[in-house]
Length: 126
Image (cartoon, rainbow, N blue to C red; front, side, top):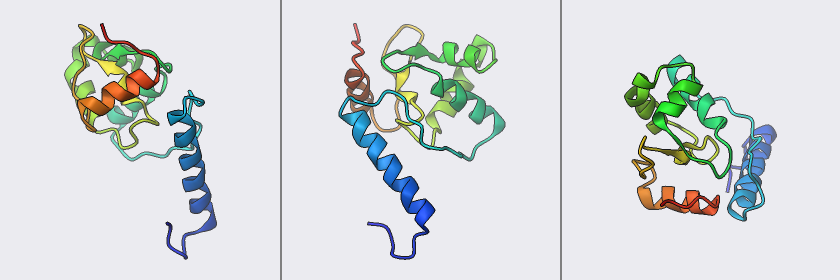
């Protein structure tokens, strides 16, 4: 599906990403190792780095993400904004972030997709 003039290195990256996503959705991959180079502010990159450290099958709050990014819990709202601007959802697992009370909250792909991703990882919302 790539154009004929796609550089081989780019085609290989797309193939690797597709294979890893297939493995993830089949329940056989828990950690992606696709090389990432995302564009964003330093703040956003700190937050996205914290998202990458959330283990498979776990959920945390926006305050937890803030603390892991070296920020105070008061940064919950700007952290939420940075989470919402994640350019590589699933691979940078923003679906693992819930409200401080454990409720399912916004997701760029829609709450039904967020719930499906959490359930795929064995997480059960109570």
